[in-house]
Image (tube, rainbow, N blue to C red; front, side, top):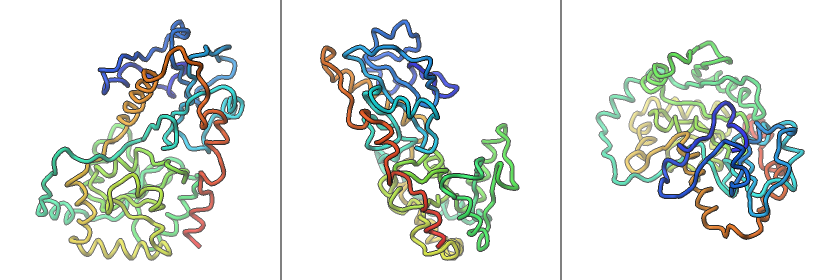
Length: 321
């Protein structure tokens, strides 16, 4: 690792799920010449602090978990071409995908105790919760919520609302969420291809129904009937009316949890563990004496990562109009 991952040091624990693979993650630059891959977290790259040369058989890996709206200001455009050889991001068309979470099939089906679920649903007395700290976003999600709140209760926690949840009380807040709320609003700060953060996968585990912006962006990542998509409804008012109907019909509401019999949601950071194992395996599969060439996504990172159509800039306005 040439950089940190924000404030975190990526260590050997990120290979803990694949101990059979003979790879090591090191952060000491003395090991640079012996490394088959050098990973650069885009948001932590300092242009004045870069290696001056790349060995012929060595990979430079572009690593980023942010949307194209939140790349580094300096390093991203400057290092876009002729620097990286592999990409490692949340995008499924990366050389190595790092999902914020994922859904996997259970080894054996889990019983679905309808009576227990009925009691859980019956005890929920509130409609929609939303934890949010960024009040003005590229996705314009705040505009959709403002319209939705005209027709249904939306409790907003954090910097943008009237409800608070201090870090010291996170566990209690999550317990309150499971117990009290029927739905959770999961609109990302950017609506971009494959940009589905841990918020969605965490909520799948919290016994609430996530409300997402677009069915197309989520349907390949989660089981059928595990979420509600806003773009299935012509207006926020129509969505609110449907949510009220579900609240008055526990039988229909509970259908959104039946997927849990066959599947389970795996949250962050296990997707990162899986990704670093995949990177390790890809290096082991390569001939260490061959000349490394940039992959198509790495050859021009910005042209790939920020290409037109990757982010739906006007999606919320289309939903509102």
